[in-house]
Structure formats: structure tokens, C-alpha cells
Length: 201
Length: 437
Image (cartoon, rainbow over all chains, first blue to last red; front, side, top):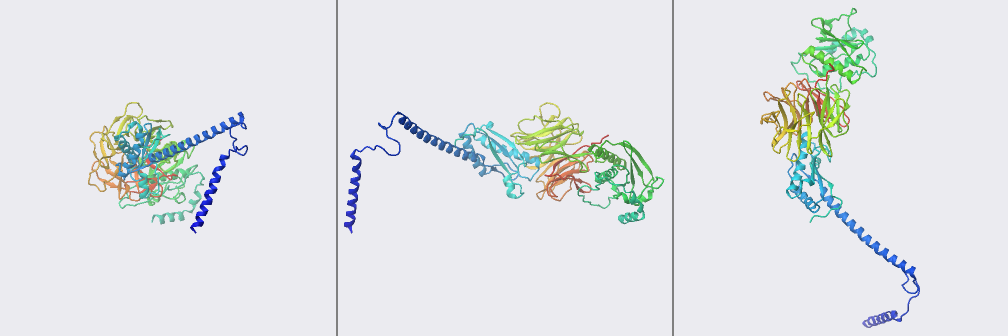
């Protein structure tokens, strides 16, 4: 049995040796499909064609790379935008920032620090309970709380515009406790410098 | 018992039926607009009974229906509410059988007849068996137009003043907001009319003469103030980059007070309503929120909502912001949330809303003795605004589903629905008297 295997291996190696020798015979291919190699058979026009084709191939590769990079940047920017757009929620009749809210604002803070041209509009909202007029003030207080938090951490006040919409633009209107919670929020909108965004450092 | 008597009359006087005026389809012959909840309290029988006699002529049914409804809504007269056909007619010689009307409960009869330019209104004193007053009034044309109705309401208010000493409140209109626009509606629910485009309108208010209104316009660029003249011209006040809201006029009409805030709380500020001077601070809230101002009728005091002491409550101060103090004692009931004050035109009461068991209810507090009364208990009721008689209040309530305006009589706590606005109605603001004379 061992002998049979050894014999097989031997014959295979012999065959391989034969194949390796083949290119050394010096036979030049004269015809066949594909691009003709430079030589007497390829005139000036042919060479120009070849050069153009090579350049086009290189160009398209570069373009693909650029496209991929742009897509990656867009994806990154989209993800940064998504982070910026995440809403901050509040307790009933309160403008204090919870630990969750502060964590969310910290992620926005990094982005603001990495993108000095970025400006945001913060809109404060209230749920439908409470006085409609008072809720306008409450929304303002929530937007101010967000701006103050970012300002205390180095973001120039001119970069954060604030606004209250009171209870006038509820996100959910089914009047449940859950919808009240979703409506007590601050929303974030990019108003400048948001075309390309660098990730937080 | 009254019903039986009325039925008997109709049987005894079958000829009356022939006198039933032919009703034109365009006429308003509705006897009661909306829902009325009657609470007959014992010992309240002192209201004079009034019967509006059937009227002959064009629009006669409308005139009778409007007068009857106005007296009913005024709560100061007992309206003998009878179909024209059941009312005993005058004697053949034109005199009236006063004892017959006295039996129906009438203390006064109103006899209306058309003239070439309007109507003549005769008030009969049933007990004295004589004419108390006869007076002619012009009516603008065309009939059924808003100005024609307003002229009739003015006459009804005048009659009410003759009979009770207190002017009626029919010749008034109520501002409100619906789907982002300011509307006005007649006191009897007729003629709902938009006064603005879709501008995120909130908190409309009248100037004391009823010639201008002001309101908050809340758009995606923030809350701004708008003044609108009765002619329709509007201007947005340049009040700064912060939020500006709940504008009210001072009783002399020259000053506007509103709430303004940027990043350090909301304070009340005052500005010349028609000038360009710099706004001056009224409240010194030190970072708290101070809003929803209302003037005492003498212009010397202001009540407003504030959270300066933590909870949301109503404070009162001098018009310049000094001497601020809580309007109500600390120990009254549910004090977690009291807001949106409105000072009565007679200066005696401040209406407000108080959260009781999580729902706002309409309350009043007597300014002198700080005695608090509760007026509603069904559903959520808010945004009270006094009528010129200091007795009726318009408020917003979702008790019928979507929020609509309702009118409350604070003496009987009767309510009636005022608006049936698609998309709801809120921020009711009762006008001063808009009498046509």
C-alpha cells in the first residue's frame, strides 16, 4: 500500500518537472486573443490604444477608490448626524438633564468639538399636560438646559440656537403616559457646517 | 305645571296656529345653540320673567330667536320659552291681556315691530299693565349679516339693562385659536370667522376698545407677537431674538405686557403698544418663569403665572412689578399647579385653572377676601376668560371629545358649548362690549 502511494507521488513529480520545462523552449506566441504584446505586430495606433486602455483602467480604479472613500465618509457623516439628531428626554415639568441625557449630550459634544463649523438648533418641547402657555416657557427652559450643558463644556453660545415649541408639536398624540414621555424632549437640527462631519476625537 | 298651562292655551286658542309666521329657510330659528345643562338652584326665583311676543315680518323668526337666546344666555332673566303659535295674541283692539301673560310667569313682555329702517321695541311691564318703554333702533342691511346680528344683540343687551340694571353681554365676540389660526365667534355661536392665516396662533387678546387684537405666533423660528387691527392690517412686533408670548393690553390700551425670555428665565415686560420704545422689565424673576399676565381693570395691578417659588402658582404685583406676592394663601387645597389667571372686568375676581386630581378645573378667587370657588368638575377645563359682565367665563374643555370653547355662568355653574370648530378650539378671549351704538 505504501509502495503504491510512493509510486503515485513519483509519477506526479515527474509530470510537474515536464511542465516546468515547457516555457524554456523559447517559443514566442504569434497570435491569440487578448491584447497583443508590444513588438513588430503592434503598430503606433495599437500602442496608443493600449496606453489609453491602461489609463482608463487606472482611472476607474482611482474613481472607485474615491467613490468608496466618499461613501465611507457619507456613512460616517450619516452616523455622526444620527448621533447629533438623537433626542434628549425630560421628566414631567422639569428641565433637569438625566444621566442618560448627559451621556447623549456628551456624544454630541465630541462631535461639536471636532467640527468647529457645526451649528445646531435645539428645540424644547413639552407634553400636553400643564398649561399651554406655561409649556412654552417649559420648552424654552429645556432648550436652555441643553445649551448651558454644552456651553459649560466649551461650546460657544453662537453655535447653539434655541427655541421652544411648547406642547404645540407633539411627537405622539395618543395621550398615554408613554407618549407624554416621548413628547417631553429636546430636538436637534443642524443649521450650518453639517455637509461633512468629522467623528469625535 | 307651566307646560300643562301652555298646552291648554294652545287648545283654547286654535286660531293662533293660523298666525304662525311662514318661516323662510335662511332664517335662524334655532332656540338653543349647543348643549345646555340647567341646574335650577333653590331660591333663585328672583329673575324677572320675559316673554318675547311673536313678531310679524321679514326675518321675524330670527329676531325673536336671537332675542330669546340672548336673554337665556345672559342668565339674568327667566325666558318664557314658547313657540310663537302657543303665545296668546294681542286683543283685537291691539291691547294686551296682561293677566294672561302674568299667568305664564312673565314680568315683562317684549313687543317688536318692523320699521322702514329697523325695529321698534316696546317693553311692557306686566304687573303695572302698561308700556314701560318704547324705542326704535336702526338695523344695518343686509339682514342676517354679522353687523345686523350684532345690532340685534346690542338691542337685547339694552333691554336686559332696562330690566335688570346690568347690561347684557350678547354684543360681544370671542377670540380663539383653531388649527393655528385666530378666529372670532359671536357670543351666541354664530359667525365663526378666521382673522389670521395659519401662523401657529396662540393666546389672542383684545384691546379695551375691541378695535385691535394681539396674539402669539409660534412658528419654527420661535414665538413672536402680532397685532391686528380690526381692518385686518397686521404687524409683527420686533421684540428681540428670544421667545415672546401671551400679549395683553393695559386697560388704557396704550401699553402691552407680554412674557419674554432668552436664556435666563421668562419675565414679563411692558412696551408701548403702538410706539417703538425699548421694552422695560416688569417682573424680576431671577431665572424663574413669569408669564400669562392679566391687568386689574384699574390698570394698577397685574396677576401672572410664576414658578419662582418652585411650584407653579399665581402671583399678583403692582403694574411695575413691585410688591409681588402669592394671590392665594398657601393652605388652599391642591396647590401643585395653578395658572393662567384672568382678572374680572369688575375687579372683584380672578379666574384661573387649578390641577385637581391631574385635571385642570376652572376656579375663581375673590381678590378682597381670597376666597376660592370651584366651577367645573367634568373633564379638563382651562384657559378662562371673563365676559364684560364678570359673571360669564369662556373656557376650553375636551369634555365632548376634542377641545372646544364652553361658556360658564359662575353663579349657577351652568355651561353651554360655544364652538364646534373642526380641529378644536382653545385660548378663548372674551371681547369687551362691541355695542353698535
